[in-house]
Amino acid sequence: MRIVLFLLTNFAVMALLLLTTKLLGLDQAMGQEYSSLLVFALIIGMGGSFVSLLLSKWMAKRSMGVEIIDPSNIRDKEIYWLYERVVQISHKAGIKTPEVGIYRGAPNAFATGWNRDDALVAVSSGLLEVMERDEIEGVLAHEIGHVANGDMVTLSLIQGVVNALVIFLARIIGSIVDKAIFKNRDGVGIGYHAMVFIAEMVLGVLASIIVMWFSRYREFRADEASASLVGMHKMVKALQKLQSMKSNPPLPKEMAAFGISGGGFASLFSSHPPLEDRINNLLRK
Image (cartoon, rainbow, N blue to C red):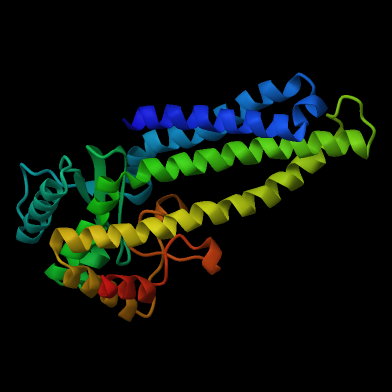
């Protein structure tokens, strides 16, 4: 179903862009080039996002140094408890048990994977050291909530859509400016390349606002999923523990969107809502 969703999204984006260019008369301004440009934008924008999704688990293991727990060879009681809780929560969420891993770092956790039945849930050594079992359960259920909700796929689709739009619109703008200002008949002179670069920077910033808005929205959903899977008080306790820490270094950029906590340099560009807002959201339910 997720492959079908990806393909349908591609077709929908193509149809929307074709309709928009025709309504605005941009197809005539671009001549015969706009259709091939549209295909190029979709291949690069959507294709790059989809490839990143497929490689996400492999990349996470290597970039974060995740040690995967082997369920047939667990000697530590705490590790055994951790793995068993993931099994139980995953079963309750209706998904296949993901791979469970531990990595060295500050208190945090993340989930990734291209498929809800082929995912990875990893927690940091710092989180295991500072959190009580109830709090860890809340974190595990939050990450499993991401997997069960299909957040990795949905976020990749949204990222792919905005990538394609940025690539397509930047080149449309570049061609029009090059023809109108620099009088380049082909519309691919130095003005074109300069304008494409500028337009991609500006449109990329605007696009990131959309992506980060959805990222914050799905954090609330994952919190609510955790509350339904293990109880609201456990998720609230976990968030309060994170809130009480003086410093909580974020995950590396490639994993930040799926961590239990994160931030950004401004609210519009933050991948996570403030912890206080997340706690209040749960308490209102």
